[in-house]
Length: 395
Image (cartoon, rainbow, N blue to C red; front, side):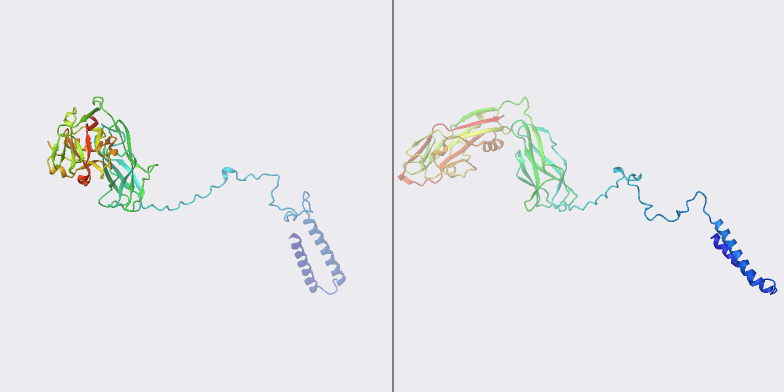
């Protein structure tokens, strides 16, 4: 830039001289002299410009500081140098957290809220009755209607029905409902648990969300008080009210079958429970069997029709024809032949029902052949020497 300015100065000087010469006398300076003056001025100007443009003594004139070497990339890192700003494991950016998708709520889903009554571990004595109530919440997407039930699904039933209606109205999603079931404490000491689930109107069973098993349950402990008397075991024999009867009348023996004249013979059996110590309507029957296997046969051992025994109440003595044809309230046994009564028959629940309603009364029933139509052509007789009732109970 300095050389260019000085050249411009020289040009202006020369131009001034030329103009001046035009105003001077023609004989003052010859053309040859003018040319020499101009050449000398140019030489001095060039010499002066070269001295001013010389580079500093400590600079290398062979290298331009403004032009990069085309063989060396100024931004290429040394391969032997580890960049100081290289991110380490702790500097690695965390991946974006995925946005959870919306999971649809199932139609049928329940949640256990609380035991309204009978919390786990509640104690009872054998035979105690109680009502268990659960509070459940509808956490599904469908309303619960009168078609929904709770169902027993395993464990100890404790006298419960197989299912109980959940509600007579409607339980919408988010609402609670209390549901109850009546139960009976078992006769023996121990811990008992019954499991329950839900069932919809299509008979689809479903559980509750806050239980790993899907069950809600009732769990109790049965404790036999130390002052409770030991169970009583007794064998009862028939009372004086035991008779047999045919169309022809009554006899003192216990017989049934077809009499020689073709009449059907019925045996009326009576056990007097009042002879059992401290037996009452609050007693618990632990076991009871009817043993009519001790019999003798006359003329036949096989029957044309089944042998039946049914519970009736014939009072002090049988009364024909009412007791003869009265429909039994409960069938105690039904066997196809005499061979079918070779072992005792269990009647525990039947006797418990009788004692609970009648106390220590007379337990009576009738035995007969179902369809005595052999006529006078066949005489068949069965006779019992000692029918017995074997019973174990808690007074």
